[in-house]
Every structure is written in structure tokens, then in C-alpha cells.
Length: 369
Image (cartoon, rainbow, N blue to C red; front, side, top):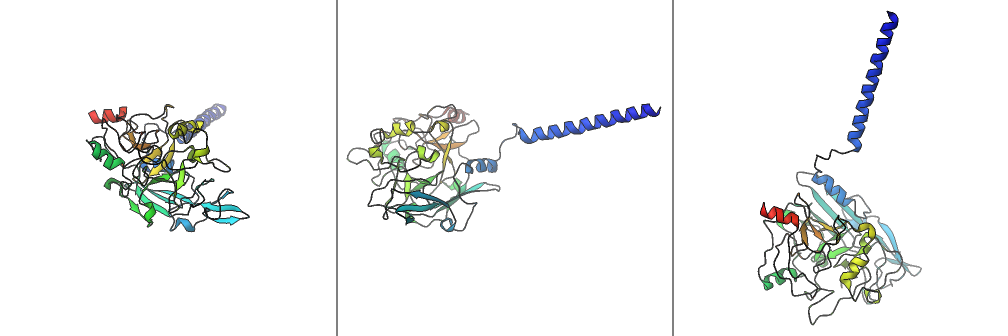
């Protein structure tokens, strides 16, 4: 009888041990395999987007320029063009960037940047790159609708007044609740910030035309092989997507004019120099209205050639998310803060614009729903 009771007890203990083990395994599975039926929160998505930026400090901070950044050296910049200090004939500066997601009933994102690249730059000897204080906070990925576009031009003049206008991104739509802490006048044309800490400015040149394929009578602007250049104020910036943002080069940077395939075909150069690892949906920046900026490829590996509105924005999933996409057509990254509409004509301030605009398949579904 005693032996029988012992055997029963052993069996009971064994069953209990297996039950505990099973519970642990199930718990571990629930930790490492997320429940796909649960949608990702806006805050989690913000954190995922922010992780793509080459940040140097945890934010927010009171003043990004007073933080300790990452030192960059460049032998091709002179005493005149160097944004930092010359050490034994080599330019040294610090790249400084904080991108902070702020949780709450409405998730916000704060971007603080000194605007200096984490690589060399090639600038004319008469100009210079200078440290900036870019600092803005905005609602992250604000909800917008294809049925309620912010811009609806129906004539050529109306479209040109929007897209061929260097001042049209001075402020952001009300839904973005933009707060700008920067006071520099040079930042009024800021459209966003790239993941590599370089500013993204409104696409237009000071002449209100495409800087790469201007309409008749205007000169092409000079940029380096990373498709960037400085303003007269020293703000180094992009007008178009650059593979340098995703995969920063080492060593000196050539001018676009002396780089094979660049000056003769900037649009093709954007694609030909895009890193193979980034030929998918790739975050390349955040716009001043809180929407994410993506590279020129979709997750399918296709180059974005249609589906964008007049602002270069696209509804890119079934949920209704809206973002800006790099393209090989003007306005290249973003020409206004959207959404905009889809007219059957393009802007006249460029010789490389869309001839017409078509909705993405997701936008078409939402529009008809």
C-alpha cells in the first residue's frame, strides 16, 4: 500500500512538473512571438522609426549644440569651409542628433539636430558649412484622409503656386501641431531631417525652380556626389534622396559635376547609387509635418514611379498610413505637406516632373469606400 501511494505521489509530482514546464514554454512563446492580431501602437511605431536615425544623444535636450556628439574628420574642407576646427590641416566637427518619441493620447516626435553630416562633404571654396540648431516637435504620423486633401489644384497656375514655391513649407498643417524651437531664418524652408542628420529643404531653388532640371532660362545648381550642398547661411542640405544617407561613404567626396553619371542624369544617379540593402521600404527621414519619409523602393523591390500625389506623398498600406516617398521625378522627396490631389497635369518649373498623378491602390480603395 505504501509503495502504491508513493507511486501515485511520484506520478502527481511528474504531472505537476510537466504542467509548470508547459506554462513556462507558452509564456516564452508569447514573449518572443508577438501576437500578430494585436496592432502596433503609435508609440511603438514611433520608436521603430526613430531607431533608424543616427542619434548621438538621448533627448529631448535643452540645446542640441551644447551636447557631446560624434567626431567627424574631413581632409578636403578648408579653414573657410570647415564647420568645426582645423587640427593639423584636417577639419574636425561633431555630428549631433536626438530624435525623441513622446508618449501620450497623441504621440509626438521631437527632432533636434545640428545639421552636420557624419561624412565628408564637397563645397565650393567660397562657401562654408555651419552648425545649425534645428529643433521641432510635431504629432507623429498624423491621421489624414485621401477624401480630404489639403491641396486641390485644378489649374496649371494653382499647381505651380503650390509646388513651385520655396515658401510653402514654412509651417505645417493644423493636424500636425508643429512647435518650432529653432529661431534661425535659414530654417523656414526646412521640409524635414534625414536619418544621417542632414537637413532636407523644400525642393525648389531660390529661383523657384527644380535645382536639377530647371525650366528654361535657369542654371542647374551645383551639388556634391551625395547630392547635397550648403545654403549661403551654411546649412548643408538635400533636395533629393541620396544613398549617402543610408550608407555614408568614407573618405573625400567628389562634386556631382566630376562624378560619372551624376551631372548628366541626376534622376538615374539616385537609383544607380542606391544601396542594394535598402532596395525595400526604407526610412530615410521625418518630415516637419510628422510623416515618415521613405526611400525610392517599396517592400516588393519595385521603384516608386506612381501612386504619389502632388506633394510626393502616398497612402501605402491598407490601414491608411501616409508618407513621403523619394522618387526620380520632381519634387523628389516632398513638395508640400500633404495629402494633395491627383491632377492630370504636372508643374512647369521643371523639365523632369510628373505629367499626371495617379492614386496608389490603397488610396483608390479608401477613396471609393
